[in-house]
Amino acid sequence: MNIKEASERTGVSSAAIRYYEKEGLIPVIDRSSVGNREIDERIIRRITFAKQMRDAGMSIENLRRYIQLFDAQEDNTNEQIALLKEQLAEMEERRDDIQAAIDHLHYKLDHFSDHMVDTENELREIERQHAAQVEKEGKDD
Image 1 (cartoon, rainbow, N blue to C red):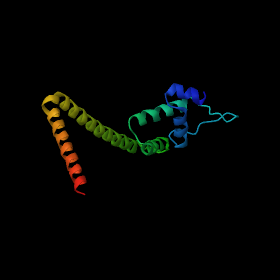
Image 2 (image 1 turned 30 degrees about the horizontal axis):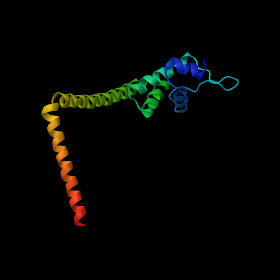
Image 3 (image 1 turned 135 degrees about the horizontal axis):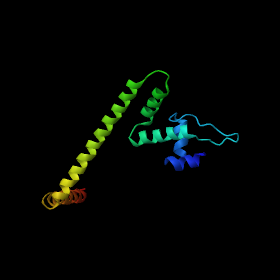
Image 4 (image 1 turned 90 degrees about the vertical axis):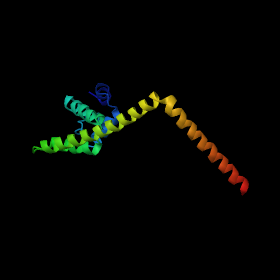
């Protein structure tokens, strides 16, 4: 299949497929006699894998390393597992940060009338005082 068909099948843009190939995230794609990429099931599986790992937040550098370990002749299972554990820890940290932000927004919404209104009024007063100070300093010059 050509790159457009592979893009439609995998949900990865043609540009991203070319980028994955250039960065070594997928094997070099065979070409037809006229230079068109000929993408087979092996490449589709690699594109899909790269997409899944990128969707899981893995950096290009770590994904490249993981693929090098996978493609190597020796058993690199422990290093592959270590990379996956590192990625999982990073994603869990991101999740925790996002959950903290969500919890904060829930708090703000749940306490809008007894917290946010007072806080916003305080901020408006600080801004008013600042504007008055700037105006006063401008008149003093």
